[in-house]
Length: 321
Image 1: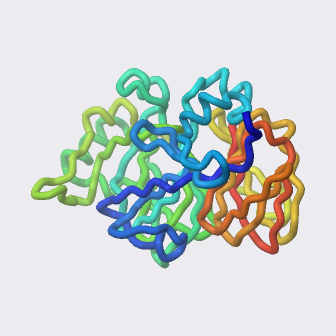
Image 2: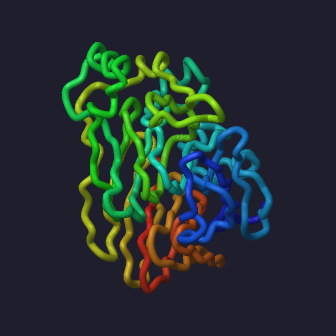
């Protein structure tokens, strides 16, 4: 079996009622219509990524895991997840406000949907002036006060709004009520799951009817506690700075102005880089692959050393701890 190398995948484009054209104009995606999401690495049933580069071009992510096992994902990852690729990497363009929503955790998602839960994080790539995120509630809530806000059609008055600024990052735990506001382009890292409970959708129509809401099943999943989602992180140049650590993924940020050697020996996991500014070239063994702004690349677990060559790039580095 031939040796693995840095892998790129064909983006899977998702048209959304709230989508826009920034994935085309800023990230050079070949899109038409209101494309809201580009799934850059996905193991979600029905939306399985295929390799874009090298001798494995056209091979599905599922087949890669089956064939290469721990060489692709890492020994501990393969023992834990088998042939299920555990993370989903996206770029999201919100031309309109997304629905107010939340996601279940592992136990409820397994019970109801035979799925992973959905823990996720965002990195703001671009935000228009006055763009906002919804993250949790703006006052102490209980199940009773929440249900009253729904029945009175007052839910928007109890939601916490936070200004979106380029370079900000947020960690969204399952159960957190949230929404991405109009004018925001972001990178999203999440568990492999497509389970979403909508609780409000700005009275948007789906054809002649209001879009479906999931208030009944969402109730058991909502976290009414205080939600501090914004991440504080170091912005030192040419260092590996941690954004967030949790059992599902570790995310670092590399703000590079010069070349960097990066040892991955201690990481028994695949490593994914999302380029959120600039561009770079990643060299591994005898292989070399460029990564442009808005691209994503997977470094197989069998690769323990890489060299990142750049005059300027900001990369999100993601792996499973």
